[in-house]
Structures are given as C-alpha cells and as structure tokens.
Length: 365
Ligand code: 5AD
Image (cartoon, rainbow, N blue to C red; front, side):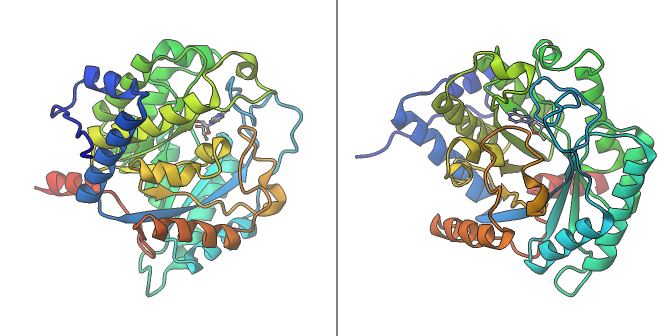
C-alpha cells in the first residue's frame, strides 16, 4: 500500500504546525516521521554527532519549580567536580573520537565557578589537540544565565557553542514555572547576547509541562525560527516529587512521548538545517527513547560522561537512564543502534550544523 505523503506548505505556517503536532493517528504520525527523516538526510546527511556530557556540578543558585537540583531541594548531596575530574572525562571523550564535549552544571555566577569553567575550557583545549582534532574538542557550555562579560570570557577561552533552554516560549507559562526573580525576557536576551558574542546558540523547551497547550508548542517552534538558533535540545517534562510542579497534573507518559517525538519531527520540517538532540529525558520515558528521537529527525546524541560516583546526584528528574552503566558500555549500545538504523557516527568532528555554515558564508559575503 502506498503510504500517504504529507503535503506541507513552504514555509510552514504556525497553523500547519499546530495541525501536525495534534496528530494522533499512527499512520499520520509515521508519515510526519518519514518526512522529517527525509528532510534530515537531504539537508544534514546521515551522520549522528556525539557530544560527551559532563554534569560538573549540581550546586544551583536557582529555584526552578520543575527541577530536581533546585536550591530548595535539601534531599540532595551537592557536588562539584574538580579540574582533574573534568579533564579526565574530557580526555576520555576525545579518546573515543566523540569530537565535542558539553559542560553542564547548576547555575552559579560566583568567581570560583566562573574560574573553574574558564580553566576547564583552557585545559580541555590544550590537552585534546591532536592529529584527528587539530582544534581540540569542540566545547559546548550549558551553565545558564550569565553576564555578557562572563559569556565573553567563556568564548575567548575557547568555548564555541552554548545551550540555554527557554523552557517555554510562552511568557505566562514561563512565569508559572519559575520564581519571580527569573524572567522570560532576561532568558531571551541572554540568547541574543550569546549570539552577539559569537557563540553558536542552542535553546530548547520541555514538552508536557502542566498547563502547556499544543499552540504553546507550535509557538516554541516559531520562537526557534525567530531567534535563528543553531541547535535544539528538548524533551518531555518529567514530574519530580521534590519540586512544586511534581504534584500538578500533566499529560500521561505516552502522550508526552508522542508529543516530544512530534516536536522533533515538526522542528526538523520547519528548520531543516539545524542540529537537534535526542535528549536523555526521552529515555527516562522509554528505554529506546533516544533511538526514537533519531528516528523522528534528531541528529545529535549526548552520551553521559559524568563520573558514575556522582551521576545519581545530578537528578534533574526521576528515571534518568545510565545511572550505573559505564560510559564504555553505553557507547557500545548506542553505536549498535545508530548503525542498525542505517545512520553513521560523525567521529572526530565538531559536527556544526549546515545552518551555522550558511550563516558564516552570509556574514562574510
Ligand atoms: N523534566 C524534564 N526536564 C527537566 N529539566 C529540568 N527539570 C526537568 C524535568 N523535571 C531540563 C530543563 C533544563 C535542562 C538542563 O533539564 O529543560 O534546561
């Protein structure tokens, strides 16, 4: 039987996005998925890029209503890796040919923390330059809202990508899931400053937040387009019992999973040439969640490199996978599934998106 092909207007309108995201019929979902993969392969190719993820500290000055490492959560042992631990994880990453590393942490703006990040960037760059990676590992930071000066220091030290999720592009919903001291506008302005400083910028959202609508999700993709971001990391909201949002009703697991996969596919169809990550949160809902993300149009995976001894303390949400699995075991498992789906791993490359490359050409022309 011929599978029905999607007819999608170009450029896709916000209404088109709402209608695709509302799909529940399995055949229609499959057709959205196939279209997204076709667009991905045509625009970005079959490579899946790895970013080794180092969760360097769960100490956080923020109190976001959804997050397990919020400062009011006292059930947690707080940790901060030292320079050597970070360097060891990064060197392992380079040795595996992963090409890029992500330094993620709870948010802090004090000098000790900023100093730790700057030193880590210098050290990783100095120690990972080699024949296969002449410019060393690519470094992505995910350490929250900082001042322009701090962003500039990070950039000058050698980091070149920065992830800062907007969490939701609906300012009212943003206000409902964050304490008063945080604002949607500040978060958005940080993204603009990051771009201005020279970072490739990434953002993302959570899917299935209590009170979030399909229109909100379609609006999130409009936000990605308007802000001209280079990469996206998004995944399902997962209620955490020690947080205020943990007790509010949200869509069921299957619904959040489907919506998350559709968000990946519809984002791919809307902005074909960006990098989209299949995030760990997908795997908290389904053991093959990350593979599913790749099958719906994602092209980036973030293998966990955090030392096993502190992994369970970086618990943003319950059900986080790979808590005890070694990074090597994880590597073998993921590689097998990537190859099985007919894709390949972009070893020893930074894996910048065609979106970035096009902008570079436009800026220099
Ligand atoms: N469910 C899903 N994702 C979460 N994050 C934090 N808490 C949760 C949760 N309960 C995500 C946020 C944050 C990223 C580091 O982790 O989107 O930006």
